[in-house]
Length: 313
Image (cartoon, rainbow, N blue to C red):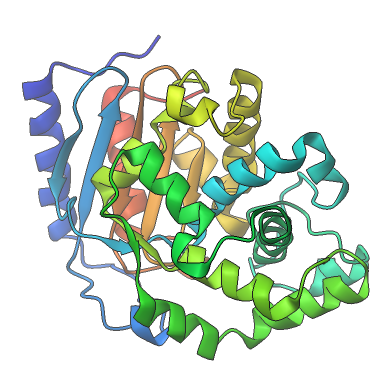
C-alpha cells in the first residue's frame, strides 16, 4: 500500500514541483477553438492532493477555478450509470479510440456507437441518458449538483461565458449528435442534449475542489456522498479502469506509461489522477499538447508520482 509522506514533507514536494514547472519553457497552447479559453495565461500552474482521511494539500494556483471541460465526463458517467446501470454499455463501448476526441471516423464505421464515454460522442450519449432521466432546469444541472455534493462546496458554478462560447462553436459536436440520432443512439432533442453537454463542460472548479470531488474513486467507492448516486466499489473500479485506458484521449497509453495511474484530462488544462486506496490529485495549467492534454499538469503529476513511487503497476 502506498502512503503519502508526512504533511510537512509532502508540502515541500508540492512546492518544489510547482517551482520547477514555472521554469519550464515548453508550455503548449491554450484551447483556442473555444474562444473563452484562449486568453487564460499559460503561466498558471497549480496542484492539489486529497489524501483519504486527511486535509487537502496544494501549491501554486490550486485555488483558481478553471473550466473542467472533459473532466466533467467522470461525473456525468457516474450519473448515467446510476440511472441505467450496465445497460449503458449497450449504447457506449469501453475501448480506447486511438482517434481524436471529436472524431467522427469510428463513429461512422461502428454505426453510431461511440468507443467509450470519455470521447465527445460517448459523452453526448451519456448526456442524452441524463437529459432523459433528469429533466432539471439548466441552473440546476445534475452534473453541477454532483460536483458540488462530492466536493461539499456549493460555490462551484457554471461559467456562462464559456457555455455561450461552447454553444457558438459547437457545430462539430452537434454533427456527432445528429449522426448518432440517425443511427438510433440519441433519444432526446439534439439541441437540448448538446447544450446540456456544453453546460457540464463549462463547470469551473479549482484543483482543490477537483481533488476533493474525485476522492471517492481513490476510496474505491466507499464514500457516503458517492454511494447516494449509485457508486459501489465495483463501479468505482470500472470508472478507474476506463480512466486508465481512455481518460486522456488518444494519448491514454502514453499517460499510463508516464504516470501509471487512472487519469482524466480536459482541454481547460486540468488533469485528475487517482491513487487507489491513498489519494486523488488534480493539476492545472492551460497550455495543451497536440493531443489536448496539459503539458505542465502532466509533467507535474508525472514528477509527483515518480518521487512518491505511486503507480498501479
